[in-house]
Each structure stands twice: as structure tokens, then as C-alpha cells.
Length: 281
Image (cartoon, rainbow, N blue to C red; front, side):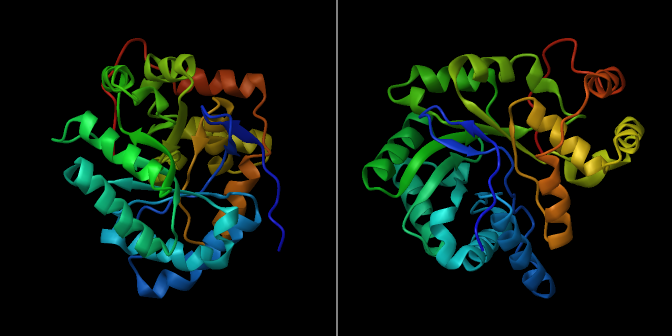
């Protein structure tokens, strides 16, 4: 089946990636759900959601194995993302962890490799590992996750640090702290922002303002929540283990939220009035 076309956002390199992808946190952990999860990931590819995000942490590698099985011979269609745990993020450890991820994924390269969060190893060590992996052709781009402005400023001041492509962070209608400083910083420096848990692992869907806006537009709360993230120029990677939910997610990429509805969401679920620590899940 031909992959559907979806609107895109640019990486710092100029390469364009779909604005809506697929997350895999908690996937691959239940044998009775495996067939549905694989079907969901494959349907997402068919619908143009070709950014697939995973991590060595997810199910101790089980999610990566699931992704590898799901994408199979369709690897060339996928913008594949994984992450190194901070405890592995020394220079040699980063390379070794990536090689383990590649083995589980059944591929010879990642399109994007992220430091999952900052740990005990200096950023210089992790950057050296990323550079080794780029030179070996095992990763195409690198980035970070859960790094705030001070960390990003430090990172980009290091030799080679200005090549950071992505900062993947928690962002949704109830977690808007990055709008005060991190999101403007990334926009100014050309770093692409990727939002994990864009519907707060389902908890956001109980928010009455979101439900009211969805009802007024004749769409679902999921679709409004995702479309709102996309309106900010941020890539969203919702997780779904069921094909019917993937279709619901995909339709969000074609939804434009009217200005009056955006204003209502801002009023009822407002952005911060000052700096707040970066939130994580």
C-alpha cells in the first residue's frame, strides 16, 4: 500500500519529517496485544505517520523488537528514532547501546538518536559517541530529550553541540511550561521540538474545555488535543496500540482549530505566566 502524504516540519538540516508520528512507550509488553500493536504501527505508516519513536528503555528493549517486526521490509519509509539511557551515555556506552538498539530493530541505521535525559556522564562524552555513530553511518541525526533551556545552552556551546536536531519533551494543553522559554529558544536556534505524551497518556481527555471544543467542532477530544500541538509547529508522537485509534490520531493532522476555539483553550487551559521547571513523565 502506498504511504499517504502528510504535512511536514523541517529539521535543522532542512530535511522534512511528518508533523505527526507514532510513539511506542508501553508497547511490546503484552503478548496478547502484540498483533494489534503491530497492525496499528503498520497502519500508521500507510497513513503517513512515518516518524516512529522508541527507546531502549521501553520494555527493556521489547518496544524496539516490536517496531523492528512491524516495519520489516518497509524500513526505507520510516524516520526511525530511538534513545540511549543516561546510564549508558558515555562515549563507548552510547555506541554500544545504539548497536544493541539496531540489532533489536533489525536495521543498520537510525534516522535520529536521542539522549533520553541527562545523567552522570558529561555531555561531551555523549556528543563524542554521537559523532562516532554518525561517522560510522549508524545514525543520521542526533538530539536530546527532557533538556531545558540551561542544558540546551550548555549543549550548543560545546564543540559539535550546535548540530543538535531535536529536543523531545513533555508538551500538551496541560503541560505548557515550555512556551515561556524553551520553545522560543528552540525556534530561535532552529531546533525541532517533538512532544511526547501529547494527550497526557489519556488524562487530558477528561478536561471539560477540551471536550467542549471538540463537541463544537464535531471531532473527538483526541483530535483537538493533537491538532493543538501541531498548531504550535511541534511534532507530536502519540502512542496507540489499536488501529482504530491510529485512524483517529491521523485525522488530527488535517484539523484546523478556529481562532475562537484556540482562544477558548488558552483561556481555560492557559500558558504559564512565568518560567517553570521542565516537566517530565
